[in-house]
Structure formats: C-alpha cells, structure tokens
Image 1 (cartoon, rainbow, N blue to C red):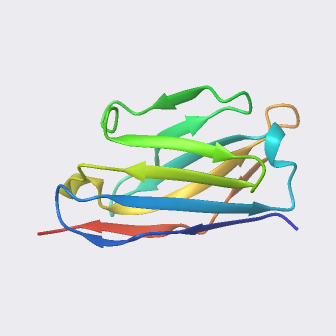
Image 2 (spheres, rainbow, N blue to C red):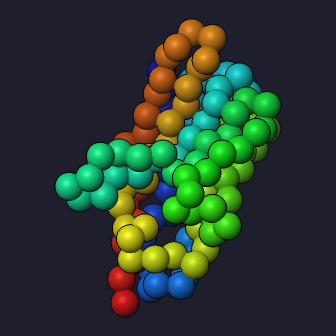
Length: 117
C-alpha cells in the first residue's frame, strides 16, 4: 500500500520559515520523480517544486530563491524548506510521487501552511 504522509505545516508570520516533510512508503522511492504542489482556497492546485529521480530540480517562479526541495532516498523522504514566506504562500501543500515509466501517480493528503501577521 502506497502512502505519502506530509508534515510540518502550521501558522507562521510573513518573513518566517517552515520545513515540510513527506514520508513515502510502499514505493521504490528512488525511481520516482517527487514534487510539492499547493492549493489555495478557490484556486487550482499548482506546482511548487519538483525533484526528479536523478536529482534535477525545478521551481515555480513565485518561489524561486525562497524554497528549496530535496530528497533523501535512504530515508524515503521528500522535504521542502520554505523561507521568506509571504501571505500568498498560504495553501494546503501536497506531496506527489510520479513514476515516469508506468505513468502512475500518488498523492498525499496535504498539510496546511498559513502565513499571517
């Protein structure tokens, strides 16, 4: 059974930092492209950052220079270090695992990040 479990969300003031984690089980973590997505109220889910199975990264323009995605294949964990947070970063953040060979995707249930004064 595949499980992606996000943690680390919470309430933070503008300019603050948070670190999100996603613990993966039931998949061969090293062959999956991993990503963070977010969905704010009333908005569609959007890509935040991805890291491929080879370690290549890509970021949404809105978070470049502020967020850092990383993966630890020894621990089957995906992380997102978020700095200089803005009110507009408020959203539910989701972890996604994508197998480019089979086309199969898996999603976590999300963790809420609220940035507010």
